[in-house]
Structures are given as C-alpha cells and as structure tokens.
Image (cartoon, rainbow, N blue to C red; front, top):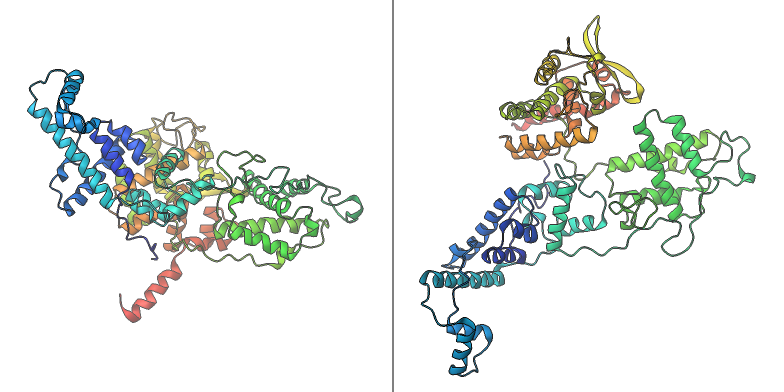
Length: 586
C-alpha cells in the first residue's frame, strides 16, 4: 500500500514556544493556562499529556548535552515572597555596580529592611530556580528550531492528529497554513475533528507560522478590477430566441430552475444540481462577462475544466461569508477527481437539456473529456469493514459501560451490516414499516429516487433490533408501538435524531473503538476514515464476497444500475493476488 513520503517522520521538534511554556511553568503559572497559550491545548487531560511529552523531550535534549540539572526541567520551584535577595543579587538586579559600598548598603536597608537570618531552604530553592531558568535559556539557544512552512506536520503536532492531517493531504505546515488561511470548512476531511477542535488547531498553528496574507474574494455586483459585471439578464435577447424553443424568454437562472423542477426527483438531487450549475454561473459571470450559455465555445468548457483541477485561491470561500459578500466564493476547497467529474457532468446535463428544449444549439462540454483519473491520495481501499475488524469493534462496545449511546452503536454496527440501509432510510424507518411477505419478514423502505423496496429482515437484523428495543425499554418489534423510530435519540427512546447528529456520533465512537483495538496500524489508519455510510458498503461487500446473486444485491441495496455493484467487490483483486502467488509464492 502506498504511503506518504513523510510517514516515518513523526518525530516531535522543539520550538521556542515549548521553552516559553516551560518558563511559564517554572514561574508557577497554572498548567492549563500555559498549555492553552503556548501549546494550543484546551482540555485538562490533554494538557497533562502534552506537559509530560514536552518535559520528556527537553530533558532528553539536556541529557544528550550532558547537563547535570536536567531533572529540574518542568518543575515548579516555589520560593517564598518574603525571602530577601542577597546583597550581590540586589546590586546586579538594579545595576548598582558603580555605587559605593556605603551607598549600596544604605539603599538595601531602606528597601529590604534589616538583614534577616537567611532561610537555607528558601535560598536553595532560589538557586535551583535560577539554575533552571539558565538551563532553559541555554537549551533554547542550542536546540530550539524555528518552525518552517516545509516542516512535516508530525514534527509539531501530536502523532494521532499529525496522521489525520497527513492522510487528508496536509503534509507540511505550509500546506496546512495555506488551506487554513483560505478559510472555509478546511477540516471536513479530518475524522473526529469538528469546529471547536479545528479552532484550537488554527490557534496553535498561529504560534508556529503567521497567517498567510491573501486577498479576500469578491463576487458581488462589481469585479475586483472595478468593471461592472453583467447583471441578471435574459438568456437571449427577444430577437434571437429560437422560434422553436420550448422555454420562451427566460433568464439564465430561470432555465436552471426549470431544469431542476423537470429532472430532480429528490431534495438531495436538487441541492447538487443547484450547487454545481450555480458555481459554473459564478465563474461564467466573473471570467466571461456578457457570455451566455448559447455563446459558449469549446475553449470556455476547457477553461472551466482546468479551473476545477486547480481552484484559484480567490475562488475558495472564507468561513461564514454569506453569498455575495466580501470573502464569499463558490468553492470551499480543492475538488477530488470524483467531484470534478460530477461538476462537469451536471453542467453538461443542464446544457443538454437546453439543447433538447431547442433553446440553444449545442453543448460544448460534449466535446471535452470528463475523465479525471484516480485521486492520487486514494489508496484503493474498499469502504467496508472486514469481518475481523467488525468483531474487534463490537468487542469494544460489548465491554464498554452500558449507556444509551453504547447500545445504539452496537445496534448500528449489527443492523446496518445486515441490512445495508442508507442513513436517510434508517432515520426515516419506523416499526410500522415492517411487513410480512410470502418470503418472510421485511422492512419497507422509501429510498433514493422516491422508489420503494423491501429489505429482508434477516436473523442478525432481527436480533440486533430486538436487543436495541429492549435496551430502550420498549419490548420487541412485534409488540412495540408502530410509530417507534427504528433509530432513536440517546435521550428519548421515542425521538428520532438528525443526520448530522448520527454522522458525528458514529465518527466519534468508531474512532474510539478503532484506537482501543489491537488491529494492525495500516488497518487502523483506514478505519479512522470510516463513517455511517461504510456500514452500507460493508453489507454490499459481504453479499458479493459470500457469492450472493448480483440481482439480489442490487435490489436489496436499491441501486438503479448493476454497474454500481463494482464498488463492493474485490474479486478481481483477489484473483490477481492468487494468480501471482501461484508463480512467485506467498
């Protein structure tokens, strides 16, 4: 399996901020506050771990240099405020070297009072603290490294987070800084990293590198150069509207609305169509002012396809910017090959529809290639959980302290592995959707494309459902209220949950289970990316690998095309490995 060129470089570096942290600790400041200010860490338990790591690193550096006082690093040596400085320290601190002895003695007695018998313990602590500070200063000059944009993220972030950043394509501090500085939801590809944790990462990154200065995008009524954009206007002037057009005189936006109304069968499809064509129209107005879809040429289509391959920074939106305001842009970040292909396909479909409606003469996107190749960062893995990994995950939830959230996760793993429902289908399911067919018990599903299908409620699914209902205090599915949601809130057994809540809770609990498992590291790295949709893929993969008929798999999963089943099978890969092993051995 291909790995990142940086994968073996998860060695933490020491920077000036680490020594600033240790000096603050030595001064007696509160550890959590110091961790927040200098290490970008907010949670108390994380601060404890981070403190130990920093102290161990700096002590190791001190020992390598033969420093006998390495044990002083990380300690808070408290010295009573009442301890008087020695006369020598008093002179040095105030720069009184050129004063006479009598003058110094007089000032010392005036400010510090009569000389008192020194406290030996307090004086020793003061000497130790000075040695500690001197050692930190010496070590910082010798070993501290200034963070560089070319540094691998593993040198500055803890290993678990660095691996997530590396897998998401943020290999260096510079790459991470550029994306964070661009704004938007830059962290969406990081498993178990939400808005709050992303803000902490950003704050810590600011202690390492300055934010990259970038011009804010602006796609309002004026272009950045000051020339006016063409406002919303009819797609054709009245005198050039084709006489045979089935749409009449419409603005560009009205043709999009008519197309979506005619072709989209679900809210999800409508959102995708509106987003992709909307992006294209922003590009069209910004880069081709005055050009209508009827005037598009092949060069325009090629130019848009090139933009999708490498989104310019001014086309990437800033976080929380509203459409039409400064900082807003049509894209949230760079696109994957699959997203680029989808964008070209949707725009081309809209133009095809206009051609079919005899509203424009041709679609130039028909003349360019939509092939995008494979994503370089994709490792070719199937988004499915192996049987061994599934058992490891289930063991974690079986051994965990029982709670509504734990019961729900056990149910999700077992039920979706056996049913293959989409998340939206599971959230909409009620016990009243269970039906008895001549072939057996099934769940009636109103799925994608507004199509109905029946999914077999097999033994594993029945057992998982009954165990989950019992944990919710509702009995079994034969006697419970038909209005009962199949999946419920952890707070109320009769209340459904939203998709965002389901997605986030599954990602969070799966990461915990994977981290606690004894699975190989390469498999853990793959499973850290798992989501609720992986359980649907797991169902399809199980059926294919166990020899289920393709038409049965297709109908169970509600796929419109049998070609879609290719994503669930590894038969060709298995055959390849088997045949090569016959020749060269395993």
